[in-house]
Amino acid sequence: MEHVPGIDAKRRKARGAVSNAPGRFDPRREEIWDGWEIVEDRPAFRTTISEEQPKSFVNYVASPDLPFDRSINPYRGCEHGCIYCFARPTHAYLGLSAGLDFETRLIARPTAPEVLRKELSAPRYKVAPMAIGTNTDPYQPVERDRGITRACLEVLRDFNHPLAIVTKGALVERDIDILAPMATAGLARVGISVTTLDPDLARRMEPRAPSPARRLAAIRRLSDAGISVRIMTSPVVPGLTDHELEAILAAGREAGATSASWIMLRLPREVSELWQEWLEEHAPGRAGKVMARVREMHGGRNYDPRWGHRMRGEGRYAEMIAQRFSAAVKRLGLEEAAPPLRTDLFAVPPQVGDQLSLF
Image (tube, rainbow, N blue to C red; front, side, top):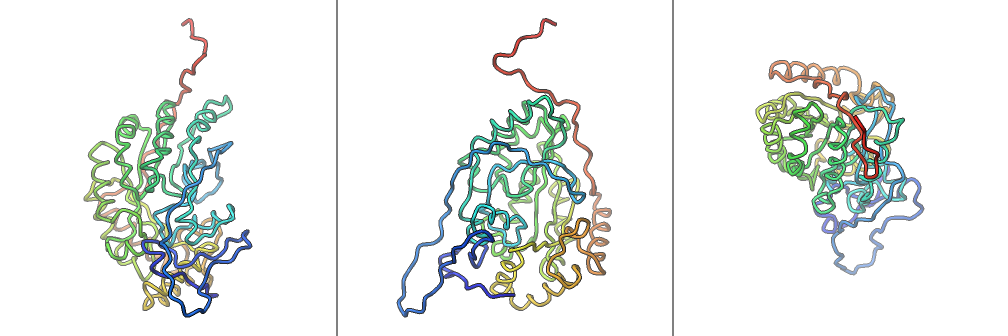
């Protein structure tokens, strides 16, 4: 791994990335110590939020690895700062770094609900479940003030549009008033990601995400409200969290989850270097073992982007994790595939100015 100079640890407190290397399309270079023997205190990195006015909002995907074909993301970047996040490289397309920029320089999309309403109203639109939170978390801290995710849920509710949410954010509890009636109608479900039950490891690996205990509490509250919840053991980190697989599933089941899923650690593009920097700082004694397992699953490489391989890897170790997962969910009574969401209730609601039907 080519070494990228890090940034003063005091300045990046409660952040995941160790560095802020330039993005693939950014000619700038990150600030590093220049050698002067002068102690200079610098302010901590603060989160800044800019805005984007999207012309379209529904993102269509064609991947055999995914159980959906469309998604929406109210925000770009994610303040949770999960160091392993596979979405970090998307910040490069904005001319920003996949490192600290990804978790400190966010883009909100305030007009997204209006754009979504327009797209769903188009005569050519064909309904299918909408995934929310597949790139960045829709319930990261900025949502508390901006409320863009909630506004999008209101649009989907008005259309009786099926939706599936993925999040680590306990703020999802705020929207139970929308999600519970939709779940009762077979239109909504939620997936909560729990990577580890160790609060110290979680704080270092996912610095601004709710604690594991808080996420489990969110599963319980959603489940008590009649919302189907999936416990997501994602990602499984070989040599670091893999030994917790069964315990995480059991904790999710006890909290009320009815289904489960897993994904192996993925290290696309810049994520590989960021992850290895993090290992060197936070788990140096395990770094060699972790990366050896990763490479074992990807033919000696840090990542294999091929469909059918990138989510799970291959080889004996990957097969062992898959077998352990299947045995655990069977023992716990969890489902690996949640019931399909309904699409037959979809209807474009009346718009202001529409001619009323005579019948």
